[in-house]
Length: 214
Image 1: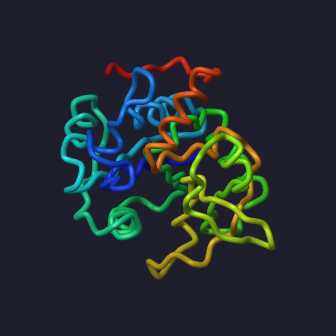
Image 2: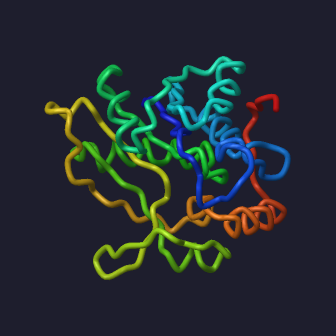
């Protein structure tokens, strides 16, 4: 079992003007709602915690009105707000998901927790990536890219952090887990990404049984 953190405090500057990034709509739902529903349907998740910031007050209200546990960060950036909150939480395995990965499924989450328990349990920090070429084939900007063992990859917006193995409140260098899964390649950062996601949504998106009211 694990706890899941949804990171929802970013300004979303690259996405342009409009609603706060977690509340930008894809189809008939806010981006964050897809992630929350996947988390609620995952069999391996015991608790869902959302980290917002001063940059996303409407997202905070949205989450609180729906009964989610919310930690409001100081807007110190992704890692600043995550780590400040994480060190105050119980030691456990945490699946950390960005609010802008709408195609993640409950089976993806369960699969990652199972992978950790069976093969990656010696790594306190796992950073999930997808092939950059896969993201580009889906019509995504793939704006954040780097090389791992000669392969160009993009962050999937997912991390596994086992604080039971971290004793100095510092994240160690991560184990990079490459997953060739189209759903996990959809990370919304630009208007082009959102447009591509609309096309992919119409092509078919599996949904779980738990729904959240808009």
